Image (cartoon, rainbow, N blue to C red):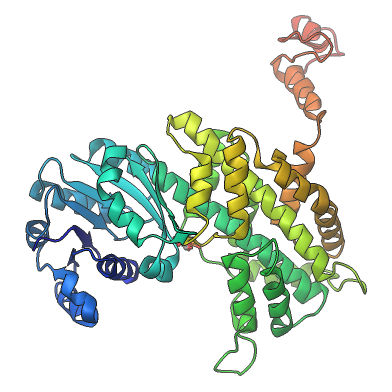
Length: 477
Ligand code: 6PG
């Protein structure tokens, strides 16, 4: 019997995904760089091994697949993917499909979709090892007909939200990896905002990790119900086997990153799509890594006056602030996706994206279902203005303001929450301050401005006359 699908790369994610595929009743052929691994993997798979076909060579892998073939690559992103495509393509028929399921930079996916010599899908897979094994969220990109070919397998292995598969075609070319990238950017901001509330509880209230755990667990019962809040409670509750104390307190406060958050921010800048909460989160990770410099800062300036007065920033208020901050963060992420749809001409169906994020992925949360509904009402409207979320924001914005101001006054850094508040304040201000920027630009560069009163554009200030007449000292320098 020929296998239904092939997979290259039996690392943690590839192995989990293969078991998931076999468990759903599909035959899967597997190949790994380390040649004894596929056989060992089959043995370890127990009963599922009956549907796992180990391949010794790439030629064997190709020969064991039913046609037209489909091969998933679950290998490190970057050059290894190009190398593997170069090895596989000559062995494949013109119509065979290669699927890159790693965390690729979507610009590479755009290139590979166009030039890799045959059908190609770029597929974002979220949910870590557990997700890959029992139901990830899957974001596919490339030609719709190629997605349709493998959709039955991908939908079968994906997470389900009330029976609906969290696997969908996001759009053409790099759209799947683009959506996964923004997912990760949102993941960074969501994590950072939770970490900031943790900091207020720890340093502002002097609470220990085991005391903080039930606070997060409580939030997980309400509007904030989400995987990230749930695991934050578990992380805070964990005991260190070596010391017997809270594990969280022995973890070094320097965050790692593999680059997808940074890619989101870079792309957002290219698209002129503001994602300040995500930017703040990436910056916070970078600053967290500078531990020695921070220690120097503390010895030079002294520690911030962190303890909060009695009764300030109680957990219930922090919860409200986090709800408001989270809405700002997702509003930014979705408007960025909308900007990319326009820029790249991709389908990028916003409600469908919110729907595949409802289960399986790292940012899954109760709120995503409401976001899907709000985006379905009007995908072009900023989520912030959807009646459901506007009501939440009206209720919680005071809490966010109080948290940001009080925390700031006590030297508790809340970069993502405060950027969320600044975004809100800018987005609810009809008359901003950029008239001054336009005046400055016109002054030094005669860039011209538009007038509020009569709507005329290309106007100049009196300094323009001075530019024409350099003897007049009242104008442009
Ligand atoms: C997911 C995650 C995952 C990502 C890790 C690590 O959706 O399953 O986003 O794909 O690789 O979260 O990301 P960082 O190392 O950059 O934190």
